[in-house]
Image (cartoon, rainbow, N blue to C red; front, side):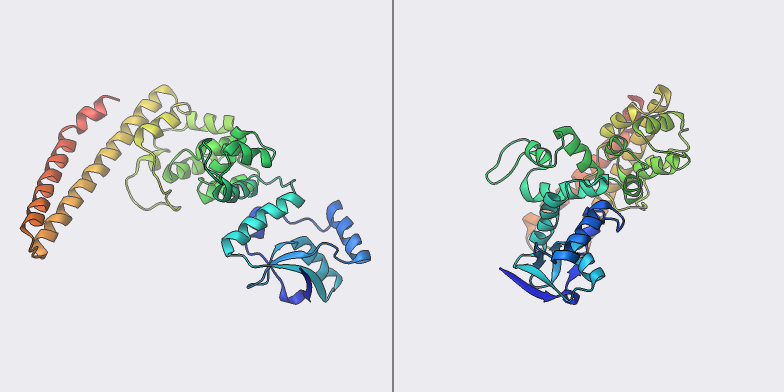
Length: 321
């Protein structure tokens, strides 16, 4: 049902520009729409979330209405949740503007539709779900391109900004997204010396010529990182494999050694910390259930054995690289 509402009561969706590049006021599309609205008014109602009066579809029409001084605009109110509103923001605007060029905005659009319609990396069909290929087809992309774009969402903010401004290409960004955040930051600082676009070939070349000192942040065990950590950290073997194609052979061996040494320290530290915490728990609290107390004491002994095993096998693990 269409109704008219005061233009000043409407506000743009706060995430609209995360997904869509605003039309330039000098672009042909904007000028044609401006002329049409000036002559005939707004013919297609804006879609608006009822509770918040946030625009879900029709941001350009709202801009033009304000530019022309229109006091009222036609709207269709929708009773939807914030999550449903964001889905409509992406889906409705894609149908009207399928020509977005910014890779990060496209990646965010795909992320929303993936969460709503399908699985992230599976082609299996579930009831009510869509396969990756179907979602990709809806965006006029090949399945491989769909996954390349989705991986951009796993980049640290510094690298996402480089994708956003066109410095880092989609293919190169997709490759770097396979690294953990601290490694991405190290590559980011190295590539910042390069003037020009960061293509896949440029990324490989810079990694090949980088000294191991310049990549030292990749094997630091300090918990402080410039960016938010990813939910699931990749295992050392995966990290070594990812960078194997980027480093010279002798650098790859040294890098693998450094990574394993850092991981051994990290795992040993984690085991010892867990053992100390459980020991303190046994000391501080009186556990009435004797069975539980005995089980916890046995677990502490097991952690001691694991810690000793890690320590005794550290040299052999590094030597096998």
